[in-house]
Length: 505
Image (cartoon, rainbow, N blue to C red; front, side):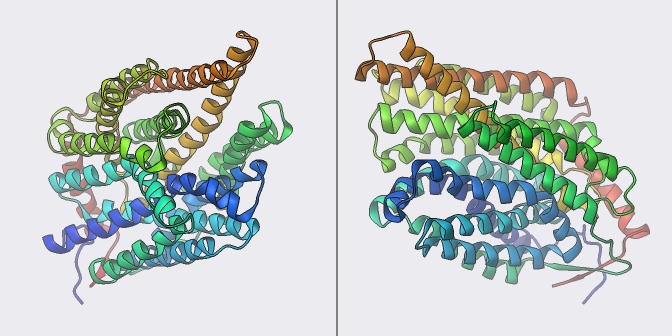
């Protein structure tokens, strides 16, 4: 055992193996948000639940995940990241096995909620491990390029994997697959992750803050989920949204006076970090238009099979990965997030507008593929720059909760996008049918296309708003790399003066 600074880089081989382990965990959490979508029709036929109940298989996960993220991030700060990471992996695997073996609708929903709870523990811990492991600016950029690519592409991978598993095995394997991923990740975590033990007093958990923010985020996600099914006028929609506003305002006020705040306001009030959280939220809301409505378009309007639909997204994934590597290794170090994030948002607008040209006569190569490639390039430009800036310069003892804020932004963005775009699309479809009476199969098909196009237009609007806000909010600090050098030096000075730690392998 030797006393070292936790910011001192470990051996190169250990560092990159750590990235592999973290990437596996992140992939498991991200793809689970879409892999189950493909399995839903088969699960519904097997377990016999209604269309009205079907949404709870998705909503149970998002409610637990979204409302517990900040708590999960803070627990990783207090309990130790290696321990929290392994607990999260094991819990997620157990919940997945329970869901795969479910013999009733209630058991499946309970398993999905449990998945969400352990996902809320795992996701911010994975990002915090990355944040505290990669402190050399150039390597940090590469690591976040990989992590950002996984965060952006995991949903599309889930669609492909879900199609393959559902068609060739059965829907239960969409949940069982997590057990095998988790086993590999746990073995890797035991071998490669370092344990950092704190010497000195351990901060206490902010119980009032935890209750306020968890209740606020639960009400926010639940309110938007109900708006999707019950309409915006329902008390179950606006009532929970109002309650969310009250609870979250109360949380902010409490954080200003709490002795051990769950989320120190300095973490989110930093201008560059705040801009990054907003960019992740907006891009999450905009990207929902891709995974949901393009999937519907391909399967319903173009009659693709689940495997064909998943395969159709592969070029977008490849472009996203290429773009993320170019962004983190060349463009972000040179231009910084103030240029890269707004540029990516503008490219996202172009991609969404290309999707509005699709109809029942469109072909994949000429019409669908170009739009997907443009959007993949856009997300590869936005996510790595925003995610590494969102956690840059954060005091190490708050790395977990700062990482949780990134995941919370993405989750809340997806929930908002789900409710808004579904409502707008449904309204557009109803309006189209009403103006093209008498109804017929052709009118219904055209109404579906009109609803998708409406969703794409509003997704383009999301990205346009994101371009303007990120251009205005990001400061003119030269580059992420220069800021990272300063943050690294500050962290080393902080370790020497204030926070002695013992690193144990």
